[in-house]
Length: 160
Image (cartoon, rainbow, N blue to C red):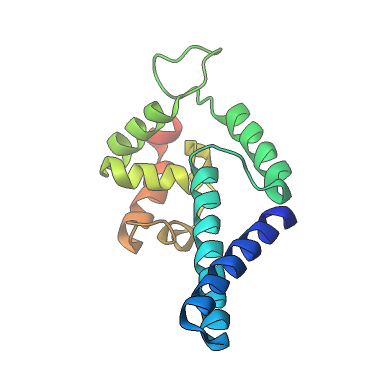
């Protein structure tokens, strides 16, 4: 969050707090309401910025470089020659990867989305994963984590 945005939140909280202080004619009401309003506005703005970043909007400048680097790597490595019907020039879309996960791992679409959103954007991402990594993903339990890793490392999945 930029300094300008923080100052705007502080200003709004001070003005609104001053209104409460004048309404109740009490400095404690002013101080308390200013503090509470600042916390609420700051938390709401923080949640809004994170929501925007998750939906593909503007990213935090501090992590922008890391995110772009990660996106480029994921896109470049997204092609998997083991998937039938895919030409060498095509990259796999998100929906095709989610469909692959639901079919190969026998999991619901939501769990496949959770895996994808956690950074497992291609089958190769699972090859170095351990069950403890996958358990951190919402909806993935230890048994399912071991099953996914076992399936990815199996011979028929690797095409050998």
